[in-house]
Image (cartoon, rainbow, N blue to C red):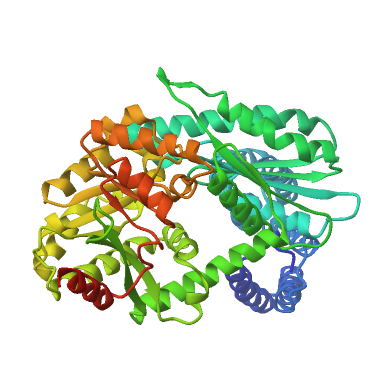
Length: 592
């Protein structure tokens, strides 16, 4: 059955019963013409029901039945007079149901005219005119009702396919458009598909409010439309859709030259970047674009998935970036998903453990602290280093669980040792930058310290310097609250270029850890590299911050740092990461 053919089986079943009754009634009353017409309608309804059951119903079948029904009414008027006229009303209602309003009123008027002419055999002109008035009132009211229904149907169709905020196509209409193109794709007509995602849109919403964010999305939609509207003038079929909060998709079908593929992404990014003021508020708007193309058969699910993968990869790279989907990219994403599953299983089965990198004091001979480092017993996951799977955990929402697990294990380890509540030893624990957005972090850490009987003054939480890229007042408040509970905070990998030295006074940290890239270049032949270390040490001491030099690999580096009065050191020259028990033995040996 054609999906657009209107059909109401109850209407036909009721009609079937009625016409059988009419046929029997008029056979008994001796009116063979009406009886014959009723039998013909029974046969027609039976034919349509069979077609419907066999999924073969077409428009022509409904049209023929309605025509037959109309002739039946005219015949009834001719044979029965006023008793036949009453059948005009349900037939007019059927016209309103089946046809559009304009067509319905035309067909209804024609039916009424012929029916009244046919009934003149039994009616005088005065009675016919009196009968005509209610009929025409019925037709007009039915027409007005049909127009109202059509209007609401149009509105509903618009709502069903449109995004309520921007007026663009929504996801449902986008999928419908793509399904249509699935069957039409060819060597001559290609598909270009782009996904534009706004950077840090959640931050904009949080800072300025959701109504402001809505207005920004409307402005972005308008700017994108301005860019793609000139392309509609050609033979290309183009769709623009908002599929998620801050994600817009552009689909272009037709002959697509390479110049268009190359130029469209920069144009879209540029039009978004040019938005510099919304409702009197100055702001900078950035975005990223993912692209994919098709010149052969495809599925709409795969195309949508590909542009999202490409767009997310572009966002990870930097702001205002473009990425094309490729099999290499897909393989990398698949591997990430594999790592995510390994992480989930390892967390579920408690397959992580800690090793500790000793931190040595000013003389370089005594252990004054340690940095907790995560490792795993899981054979598959252990083939990846923490530098690989920790960012994946951050990306896929597992980092809070991972951080809490590491903190708990570190606290338990310290609690069970002789170093607990020792003011000459501190334990450093790495935490994700995402904790700077977690308003419950400080409370969670303090509660955990109380549960494990650990003194917060022995604990130092380390954040990488990259965490300060999106540093805001919320981050400052979380660090201050953490410090208020007695914990200290260190800035890891310092000097890699993200933080201006003048900004140090704004960051409530206690310790700077000099990045290993500076330490590794200190030797007799590269003494100039030590100038950067000198600057970091001078500024740290100016702000009363402790300094830990990472990556000490030889005696020259250690001597250089000791001569510059560095506070602490760690690196493979002093010790590689070791178990807690081994570190305790080293401390005990020194004491003896």
